[in-house]
Image (cartoon, rainbow, N blue to C red; front, side, top):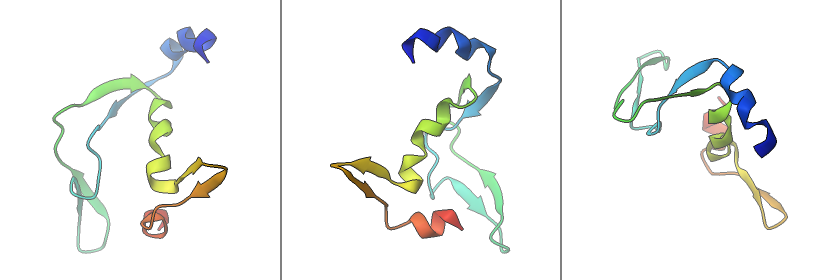
Length: 77
């Protein structure tokens, strides 16, 4: 991975939201996302860098076992 860091410059940028959680996501009466709040620390990053945090929703592998958070089924919906 370290040998390929220069390739990050070729990826498109996205604006990351470092505080994305259930408190900062606005949902309308139809359960559709209507907005994101608390853009205190937005940072443009190469596309794909944010995927490393997906384990917070999907789970993580540790101690030779996959652990899913209790909220996984709701997040999957």
